[in-house]
Image 1 (cartoon, helix red, strand yellow):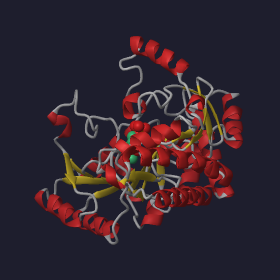
Image 2: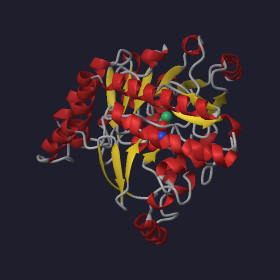
Image 3: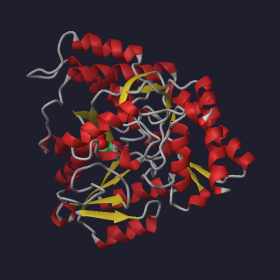
Length: 416
Ligand code: PMP
């Protein structure tokens, strides 16, 4: 494609200039442009359909970020939209929950071997913080353990940026090295009898890092340590949930947790989070004060029921795995023939790719992802990617024609 045909972002830039005047930074958090490549990405989106999204300048992209996870069936999935519209035609937010509150809880309990009950909220951070409160209520202990560098949300105990947070907010949070059972045993031994809960993602998917799967025996060891020490084991399945297994990612990765945290993909883009638990923790959950203004809204719950049933009936998880594998193989072939060394990590439905020669600098990743984006393939240089069940072989093959060009540009620029 000649350079003149590359995407332009005039309207995005105008909107961003307006945004900067009235919103600190224009866009903040994980969707801030500072994490992307200046000039190569839009800042504002206009619409989405299936695995395609359009920005405010009318540029079209094949979407490999899926709203950073929520869009698991594709944008505007007809069955989900129909269920949400039917619910919305009657209302959404009442003095009390609707029937869908019960129906969705029953469905989640039905598909989740590790869970006997469910609570609902809005954001992932709501349920990760809640899970530790339940662990504390159950054990009457104070401390929690997490893997160093893992992301569990934006609340003070776990926010990756400490600005505005006090030492006291973090005083009860301990860390251990992911995949290192000896280190976990050391932290547990040093705090014996004080640890209420251990919170763990199904695999390591920290930003700025290759993904890392649990080593053989790691999950089993974690479960044994928690059982021996009376520690509540929480699976933070917010990022990977509903992409690897409908019963929770622990089911494919050999981990039976005591509590599960879901958010992102549960309702195909509608705002909903869920905390699931085992029978033994029901009483503790009952004691924890947990509520929020919009938490009983019925439209996202109707959307979640439709999302889960569609994934189940239409083989969405298998489709994401197949398309993620096709994309991965294509990237492998392209880089092998160009003599570029890449690392492809994580499960095919939640993949990530880095360049060996970058050695953690992400220079090649930024050039590669920027060149993809300005040609219509939305991938991210420092955050893992996401497949949806709407990606088809034709979409993957079309995306690969763009990645081929972007890899050549990396090769020309860096030589290796
Ligand atoms: N845990 C994990 C693993 C996540 O990926 C996220 C969101 N990126 C969260 C917790 C927090 O979710 P939220 O942003 O909805 O609060």
